[in-house]
Image (cartoon, rainbow, N blue to C red; front, side, top):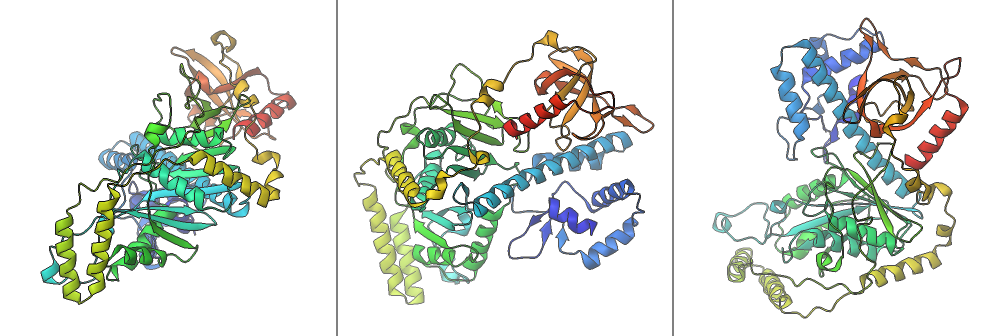
Length: 552
């Protein structure tokens, strides 16, 4: 039972298989140690290591710790595993194991937050829209693709095909294919997003967008700037852009790609139309639409943005519109952090102005394609399989690619088109007007609520309310100031308790009081006392409730 619960919490489900893969920072012995620790907390006698391994081999062989993985590995996981294996000091080992447990718990919480967004979009599609986007490994989509390659065709030149996939949760799956006629940067990602939004029948007020951490395609000022523009143009009232922890990003979109890859490996795929058809048959949970992407827009030229720094560190950004009609950006290091942070700097907004001018399309570039070699080799494939239509399709497709390079592309009134779709949707779906308060953007009072604590106000001995990632599961977080340290740091003694229970200083058995060191910016209230019975005063409980409402 413990092992199954542990795998559900920390393992990644492998598509087309019943196997679960645990993070690479773990070993079987370390998993057994974690089980023993949990058993001791419950005063249960844990099984021996040998007996645990026997049960694992006989009853839990679907749970694996892979030596190699096709997905990128987490740097933190690898470093922790190596350092734990290298040390012989008990205290150092315990500290590293504690760091590992915090790391695994955090990645699980990030994943659960993503699942929560999916659930909200599925259960309340009139208010929420959840989209995840990612690109597939191009080595698995090159065509022609043959199940069994004859020796005479072993060295044919195959056309590299890119697949950008997207799952719109509760609505459908989309696949956009191209032959690398465009650079796959921010403009490409945003063009795919625009195509998806244009195909939807309805645009609700809240968008949850889940992306990979790649800075060139996703985590950059152009993607964030366009999201701000969607909010400022009233396409959405609120947008959250989220990024899973690096090395722990294997999600439903990767399961889609895996199913597609497995199905494609069992079929002869001679032309791009075959590849798209195979993609449309690989997934049964939702309707699947595959298409050749026809237009990519020049967002990098179109968007007028201020510079932005350090945006690679947060894992979630939130955009809402303030009372001045401007899109504001807030961020968190982790989606489970309780407090949104307002960006600082000389420029207040990422978006310089709300320009509704048409956006130019990027001309496709096929200079990297060897048309002569492709025609020769695909003709060779057609003759071998005695299929004239293969040669005919390739000749027509390559001619289209050559002609595309010379096309004169008119600009697109992108924002106007999305506004019209939004207005049509509001007319068709009256319930969208009846939003509950919890669904509306965070009030402007949150912005005004952000204050800077003056150094002299905090004194040694003060009780404080904190919002620190050191113990995110403990809420509210109460502590007493033990010492004021240099560089805006404080030494605190945490208190144990809940909103409705008594509070006592935190002590470890036989080791004395627990202390933590934090920055002053995690203190959001201070200078109060517990009641005579050790409870939080009524006004502090109300303050905690208001803080939760505004920041969670």
